[in-house]
Image 1 (cartoon, rainbow, N blue to C red):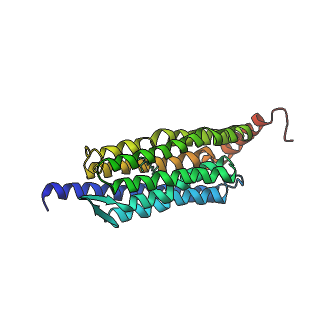
Image 2: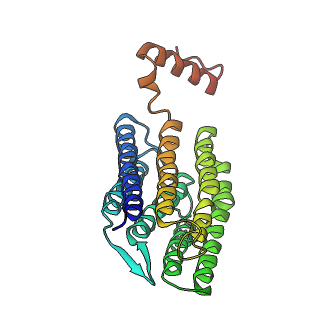
Image 3: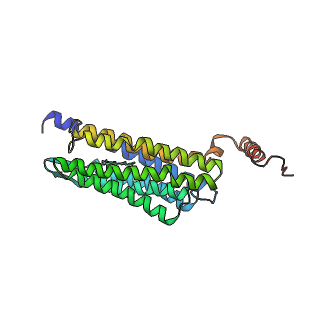
Length: 260
Ligand code: RET
């Protein structure tokens, strides 16, 4: 193996190891929030927290595997990180499922959102196994599925929530939705620049970039979801300060009503 190849393998496996560590931190944050939070309303209930733990927990395992090239395959002379697509097929439905759960969407809408998401990932995977124009055909179909997903997140789900939920719930939904709308759009861009398509980015660069994006998409999601719930506020302020803040907040929420 040449020194250059050695260095690029090292760059990839190191970034996957760092990714695994950061995603493990995300998992610990969700577990801590789950323990501390006593709210009992979606998505801040057991189902919601279990989804958050799954999102970074499963990705942590995938990153540990990818750091050793587990399940990597060579197709048409291009090495493909199969585990990445397995990770995405499991965790992106959890991410959009969390959104649908937060929005208290109907079962039909939840199914539609998850099907669009799975189609996006599966069509993308089929695309990297192709050569020539077929790579772009499947990449294009996958992008259509992505737009369907974005439509649901910005359209029906948002409307559902805006009509029914309080301001705090709407705030977390809107932040998470914008994260998905902006950050996820970088995935097809990196994909089309990487080896099976235009081949402008090397495999090492693709691996490092996607690690950043996955960590931002998942750790960012978990941080926003847990922070907006305010579950850690009690740890940041000392107890009496926290009680005063809470009382003030309640007073703001129900002005005039004095709690004896
Ligand atoms: C593919 C194929 C090309 C077209 C599109 C794609 C979209 C991928 C996305 C992946 C998101 C992954 C996340 C992982 C979190 O860790 C499959 C690259 C549209 C949006 C958020």
